[in-house]
Image (cartoon, rainbow, N blue to C red; front, side, top):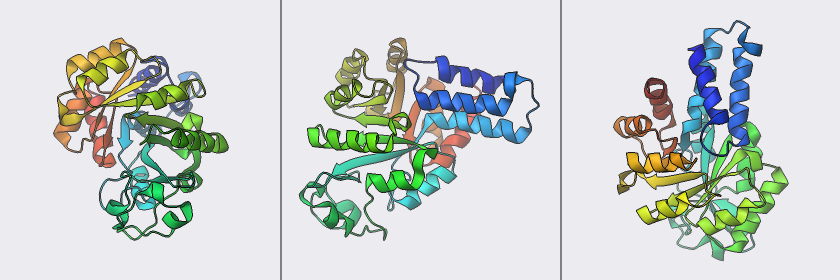
Length: 289
């Protein structure tokens, strides 16, 4: 088991493509658990914790926990308690340039109020109550609560300069560039972030085979993500992505069969609503493959 942890830590440092700071930190943490030079005795609990840390690198908690209370502190807390080291935030922007977390651009799904967030001020959004009884979270509130103890998988849901600039501002304010994977359907938005944040991993959400092939040629795209049931999560696409030194990802998988298929194919990371199940299956199948 100790050798397995060492091998996985090495993969995180020397694996596909540009290895980002959070991956290197994970490997360093495991090295600490193993003891200096591997010469110190390590108990079973430490080994288990080290393995959990590495396996959690493959699991992205979709909206924290998808469902009626997605993108709430409760959803994020549940995912983290289940072992997540990566929680997802979808960004929307208020009329006065403040970033909030919601999958939909319209507030109807979360709050029952049929109005676009972009037409409301931050103060107006702060007064909304979700159907689950919480508030719509500002991204700053998420950062304030969880700090750098976890990593964030943040989707820019617009290619507008206002959203990108607000994102850059908050990243710089909190100095979280090493704790973020930024994702978008809009690859031009990812490209515009490359010069300023070359070491921030960038995930392109692909809707077609043409998107996949285009992103294979974009140096700034580090992760190519495809929908699980779209016909794009194939062994040939996975191998092509790896051949380009990138990571292959999929969304959103929640069943044992789907997660096992992804692991056995060599998918590097995936979005799931069930972090606990995913990490349990990672222990069972990733370590066998």
